[in-house]
Image 1 (cartoon, rainbow, N blue to C red):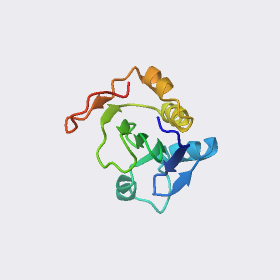
Image 2: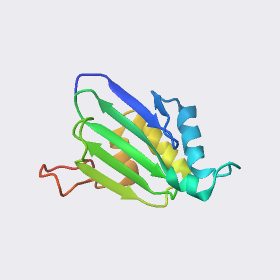
Image 3: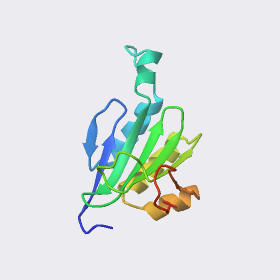
Length: 137
């Protein structure tokens, strides 16, 4: 990994970025995904903004992303660098509760990549469009 300091950014469901989010920020973002009871919002409004994610990375080095969707799908992504458009590894799991998502986001915010791997027993596969071998888990 890079010698630079790690950074963490939470992107909430409706687009607000929170740098170095607190546990309360992460909890509120998870609640926002699953509590769809705003009187002014319609199903179309909720469908237009279905996800939120946490990014953990370095200025010169890899970036890890855990994206959570309102349908309880969680996608874990690894990018070689924060400027890359295409992930070098991707793993999707389904039917994860808000509690599961919060736990994964907390681990990522702390940079606990190995803990995430163990929690999911995952094989974050390299996307076929990249020729580099390797995986996140």
